[in-house]
Image (cartoon, rainbow, N blue to C red):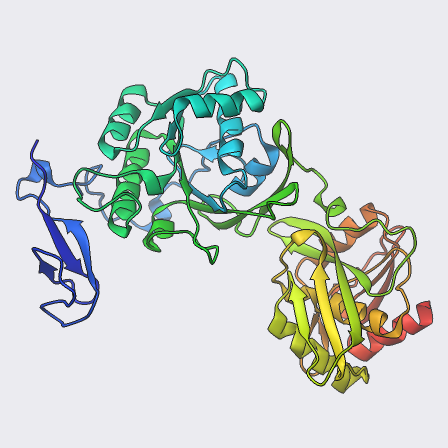
Length: 455
């Protein structure tokens, strides 16, 4: 079969050129030409032919909506992030730093699916079959019947998928796969886009669920074109410090479940194990309360999770430092200004360091109140009471705003043995929660007054 003709398409105006040029001959834009493949004139040669007959126009109310069936992967935390399991014909993109455990987790999941009677296929483009077998042996997966294919040519991978019809296939990784239709090297923008598009169409046509492993850049974003994330159904990010044994998987996009859902894993000698109570990771075990420590309840997807916020306030020089780890640095500067203006707590000549314990990243503003109370505790050198927690968003006017799903946060805290909570007035429950004393506040100065009465 003859190859289709390679052309170069301008990202700006859509014009084409038979060869690569530094400047588009149509709109004069620089560095805008990207390699692509010209469509053949014959209908049978059209690479983008529809997979099904053209659908008729129907009213939305006349379309029958049914819940998608899910297949559990055998990893409870992974299933939580996926929304309950793998969906037939779904395409999942998972990215993360090198060595963080992407291949390990997926090999474990494939083995569990295979033992449950599902046909599986592991396509490796970065390792040989022997290397995959060595990893399986280290993970204790002796006797695994997972099918392995060491291949990077797209056309051969698609032929194998068509011949074996697996229920789930893993492509490790999409940056190593190349198509004969393009002359550019594997990992280039054109190759990644083209290969991902073909694999996505194959998944939808055959019903095979495909998991694509993606590389990430130095900035932590998925390498390749942004359209890669738009093509797939689910985008997962593997997070965590390689020097720590704990890993987080976060759903950034999920057409079949909640976004910002997280799964927590611990790296062991036998691979990744799910952590059913992640709050224990993010809470330091202090024998006695220490200054500068305040526990908050954050919401990650559908899961309320307790995280310890630590603050250290120390005398600084003429240019005091403001440093935050796991929290927004700009928001820290704003909270210090609100604390000074509305509560009379000045840190103008002090270095302020704030840290979310366990390497978790908190993006929601419900951490504001806990950060301010931790800073106040460190500045005064007085610890917060034992079993104390706080959450709530703080505005520039000093008001404490409610956090979403406050009842679930408080119930989670009570379940873990916390006894005192300072929360926004709008989050105060109508019925008391057993074992938990709740102080509802409307302003920052009220929260600090509550602390004084508890000391």
